[in-house]
Length: 128
Image 1: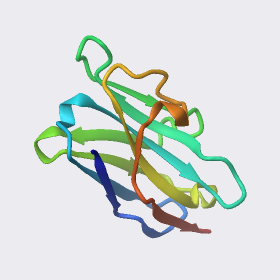
Image 2: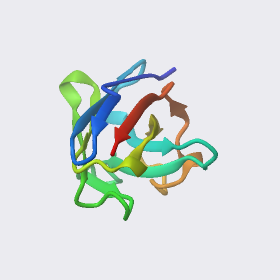
Image 3: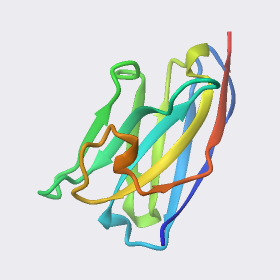
Image 4: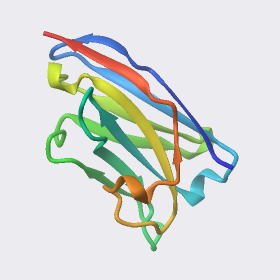
């Protein structure tokens, strides 16, 4: 019903930047709240950022404490695409990053089980 395709992962040096993209299809983008999660080897999938309209259609962005001030989520509704701008990268940011989608109004934004649709993930590797 909803297909998500991530891109933009790769190799960066510590202190560098990457921009991840997630293109959505199969559903009106305005009906979706979008989130980014990451999963490092041997660890649970971890919330990074979310973009939502809430119930008022006002735009909100939410971030995990560990990435506040470094990562920025944005969305381009005309392109049905959500982005994760990652700055000041650290080696501990190394993980597979997943894009996820939930219907508008789904809460809470930081829970894995809030999201019904997931991309296949894109690898981000940060060298020291």
